Image (cartoon, rainbow, N blue to C red; front, side, top):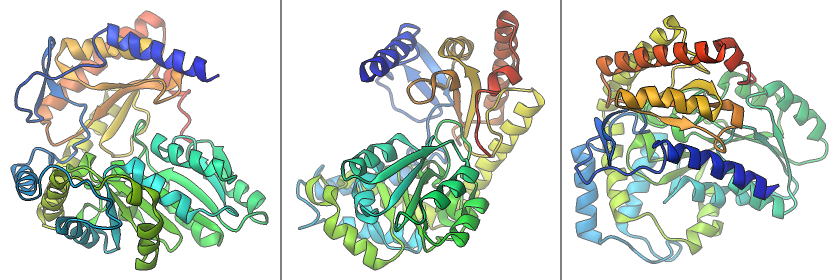
Length: 417
């Protein structure tokens, strides 16, 4: 089974490599984000980066990162259980101001999941995974399986099934954890926060664990993320988020419900003891970005992005493009169904010097392929018009050739809402 999985994944990736759309490298030129200079391909409009608010290339954030390296060097090779740089504490304190909760910082979101889940989920608990929960969460739950913890997967965003599963498991386990994303990285759809909050209030053993990596910065007060823009930090919720992507710095934040849990994770979290700390350059960038988030400037950035999102989704609907979900997030998936059709739509984009990546197997199921469009402040309305025009013509041609329609493509994408 594993060999078949890797063979199929290798086949798909090699197919996109052979067509010049995967495993590419940029030219040795300054990277500004407005355009992507790709070696042997030329200059492309950027519709592929997750730097939604254009913070990663902000001169102030870069300067903070440079100054941190000058002061502390490139790397501090010691377990933070025993010693950490004072800039580490400064970074955690300023991120705590954004969330009004105690936080811990780690180099990667994957490490945050591996740190947290074995501590907060006990052997008498059960775990329910959303089918589309981020792979980094699944990696961490593989560790839980080795401890004998009961784990099930349900269809994406299917909260009716979640309620039924809860009732099945309630008498057998101390806690039932639902592991999910705030904004899903491939389809661009979101956690139904109203319904999940109602379930949390109804079922006393239900606990929620959310990865809100793609909801960070562009949404919420001080950019604290999509989930916390829709609901309060529930007493039975645990949140982990990325400080890359929209935040534009790197690393990950474990947002703890209280100081006691933060201390427990700090003492017992395996990666905190045995893996390397966040690098000084990243800590400096985190502090620089956090200052933007705590300033009214973040509100203006969010408003500018909302204008672009409104424009895209409004016109995509008018043009009858096969967008999987029209929720206003910076991730829009134009459904293609198969990798072959993804490549054909990609050809049209590349011909017009637009860079967008494919959502392809194994990141999504084989027949849930699509073109992944990232909406960011690197773009203009004119850029958006070009993208929309190219997509409309490309889909019209592809449908005519294959005798397909939006309905035939989209029926494979069941979001469970």
